Image (cartoon, rainbow, N blue to C red; front, side, top):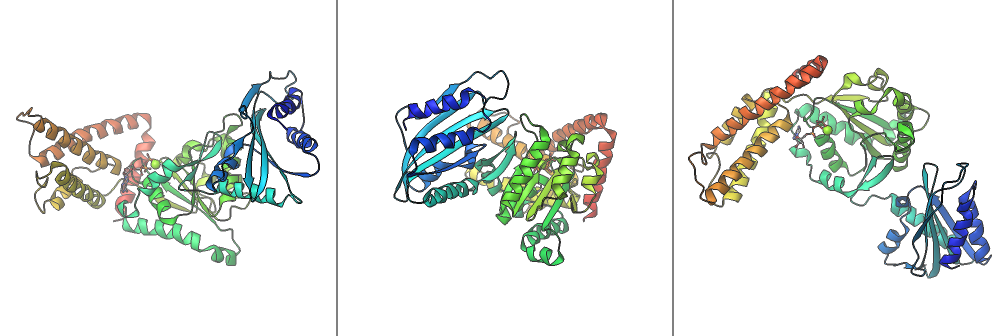
Length: 460
Ligand SMILES: Nc1ncnc2c1ncn2[C@@H]1O[C@H](COP(=O)(O)OP(=O)(O)OP(=O)(O)O)[C@@H](O)[C@H]1O
Ligand SMILES: [Mg+2]
């Protein structure tokens, strides 16, 4: 069948209201190719689920388009009675060899109502349809396997992200500074979950677990998740919101959990849970978290800055979020450990960048300076502490370039420790401003932050 002929079939197919476009396409293809040909077909909602061309290329086969116009699109006006399939159809025919069998694949994608469809009809000559089924199953497997990627749900669909995968690869567990007990509990709770399938089975309970990481912004919730993911190597599914473009967040929740069940054992990450759980989606989420469907092999890790905004049924009922971790503002000791890490980084980066200008702070001074920073930064988050050192390094780089270009002024090379302390003063002013505006927005939030801060101190 030529491209033109395929196009005619599609024209007839989509021109009027039809109840099952897929079935009609199959019928036409069967009629055209006759009984000596086999047909294996699939219809999916996004091409990413059946990456036929990508798979063929991965095994060294390059499909050829049939004629120049192999991919074309044409539009139909929306039918008056809204029953019709509309509006954009794109289609094409490809040919290739697979397992010594010549294949021809008819591809058509269209939109019906709010849904997208993509049809692949694999036609080949053989005594059984085995080779076509095998190919389809390999393409599906290839499509759902992660290759240096993680799954990200956004705007109504799941996509693989290699950018996030590589960001995760840069996060090391050793670099996360937390109270030792908290860190050990987290490691144990996550690692043992994946090792304990049999234990759950023997106890007759579903092999699933939910962790909630709570606390004010910038204290390592996301950083911890990234470092944990890096450690286990299980499939990771990252959710930014429950939204879908047309069908509402309830549908999004169903898509999210169906995908997680398909990829279990896996880690399902729900970031900023409080902003996701609106009254409208509450019962849907409860249903998916522990309704009839089995979530075996799913470790759900959620984060929130505002646990008080999350419905009690989700927050406090076991089997939904079994364990809660408080990521409060860092204590004096944690601030010192974090500062020491950065003082070391600053020392080594300066030695490398200044090529011989020498160490930034005197030899053996690191510990004292980190202690001084920790003392002066009470109430700061880790993220602000990090900002302190980053802005400090930038300022030094700026001063260095002024010196190099001989725009020497008296202030260009002040005492380095003074520069650091000066940066603390500046950032403190910013933090105070932020806290004041947060206080205006919500007095309760401030109360919560203080609670978290004291609880973090109580770890020590
Ligand atoms: N405990 C920590 N150990 C090491 N680095 C940290 C820690 N906490 C925060 N950081 C640094 O601060 C940055 C921001 O932290 P992170 O994104 O983990 O905060 P968060 O708790 O997820 O905040 P939010 O609630 O706003 O999402 C991180 O990229 C990391 O560099
Ligand atoms: Mg975060």
